[in-house]
Amino acid sequence: MLNPLLALARGLQDTSLRLDLSQSTWGVPIIGAIHVLAIAWFGGAALVQDSQLRRFRWIGLSILTFTGALLFWSQPLRLYYSQFFRVKMFFLVLIGVTALLPARHARLAMVVSLVLWAGVILASRGIAYR
Image 1 (cartoon, rainbow, N blue to C red):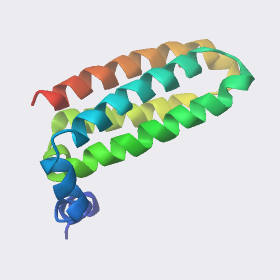
Image 2 (image 1 turned 45 degrees about the vertical axis):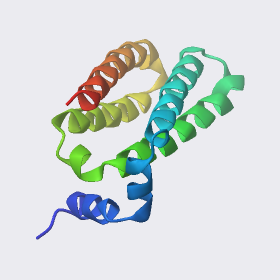
Image 3 (image 1 turned 30 degrees about the vertical axis):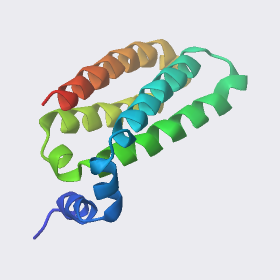
Image 4 (image 1 turned 30 degrees about the horizontal axis):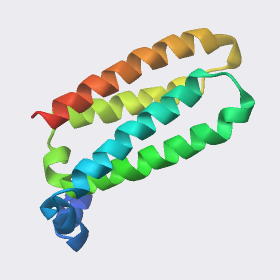
């Protein structure tokens, strides 16, 4: 039985968007730059405890998710088989779980989240250079 994530990666591999992205001189670098800016946007908004900034967090997260999906789409099979990509996704899931901790554990959640985000950044660099 075929792994559904592998099936998705194989399906994306054969799309015209993947070919357009992978053959573009500037497409992936521009999307990557926007992805990094969205990390800064989301991270900055997440560090400030102001309910007014909640909208900015969602905007940053939306841009981050969209650009991340496009980056995955540009090289789905390579990323599917990348151990660094798997570690990055695992850390992102843990960050999501950490965000669900009760308010009384906010300080712990913040520290754990920052450590996990550092792991995401390091894993991302591993993806880029492997």
